[in-house]
Length: 201
Image (tube, rainbow, N blue to C red):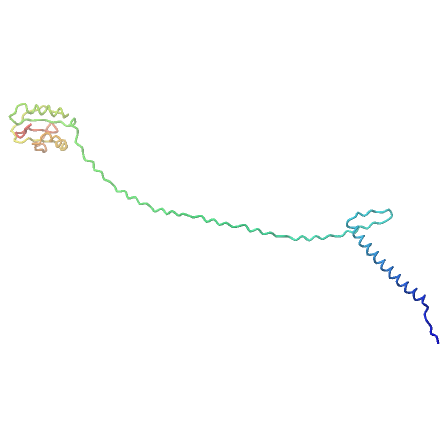
């Protein structure tokens, strides 16, 4: 008994139809994907040329730029300068001033300010006159010479108050004289010299 079999022509037709559909779908997918890629590329790099009667849509792609702040820390070398401080300590200076007491010795008057009288108590004539001339040559103010009685054995050199120094100076000319204050009450001379027997000049 013979069975039923499908005609071979019909099966092949179905198989070819399916294969065609698959090819069409693949081609569509490729075309759509290519169109999307071309559209993106044109929107970024090519100016869109408007065509009359056609609305042009420009798609702007926002570009986000992320800027990272870079902090650069520069460390400067630190130079520490130490200045040497010199401390000068000034010690207080104590100056002790000692008071110097200067004692001024009284000076004798010059001969021009001293009046002298010469008296002769010896037997030698003219002795008083000669001594008077010699003292005048030294600058003394001489009074008129005279004689003196009684006779003295030693020369006497008398002075009035205030003329002690002048009498000591004049006594250098009469080494044998005894120097002392005037024994009388009054005299015109500051110094009186009485030549005695001891005078050898």
